[in-house]
Image (cartoon, rainbow, N blue to C red; front, side, top):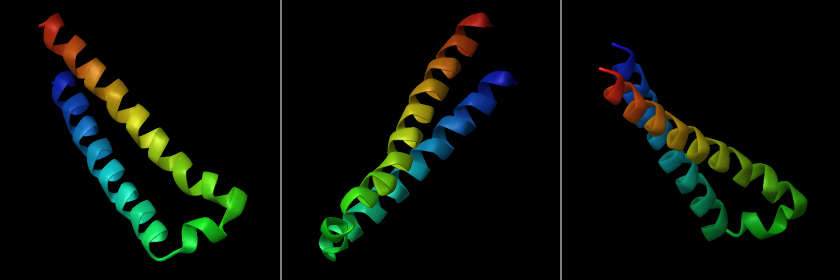
Length: 68
């Protein structure tokens, strides 16, 4: 049962990463990204957190499969 939680968390983190990447791409295309200055780091930081979370959840999912 635990492995399904990690799989669902990995899928959710992947979708969040894809959504946030489209937000960043939209900001770049519309030209708002360059005008943000230092605040651009605040726009990119959640994407890094989502990617890290997805990586960790995938690792936990692989470990949960091995335990069975």
